[in-house]
Length: 110
Image (cartoon, rainbow, N blue to C red; front, side):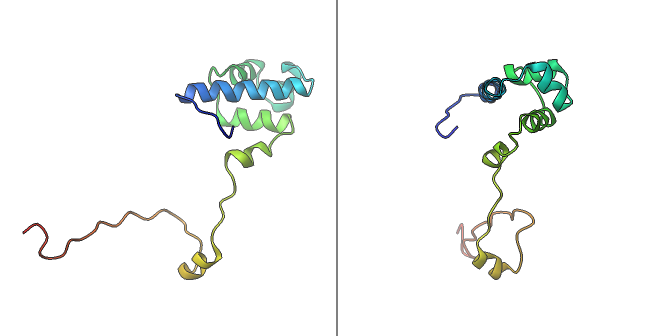
């Protein structure tokens, strides 16, 4: 997916579904077997593979059934923190901070 360019989330959903279908077929598993192993309905698997709509739980269950959970590392890699930044702050950030508004000083706007 390094150079995937898409114009809509729906297109990305279709591409992801095609790749999951290809993965399933490359492992020579039919939809009934994968759906059963994943604990989802065959219809949910068909929807996922066709890009017709699904949910995150179905995606995770299907990837687990296909023994492909490592794929999620590419999708959402573990964040890394600079050791120096942690030393300066004292701990890893828990939330994003608000951007600071630049002050022009007391004479601003005069």
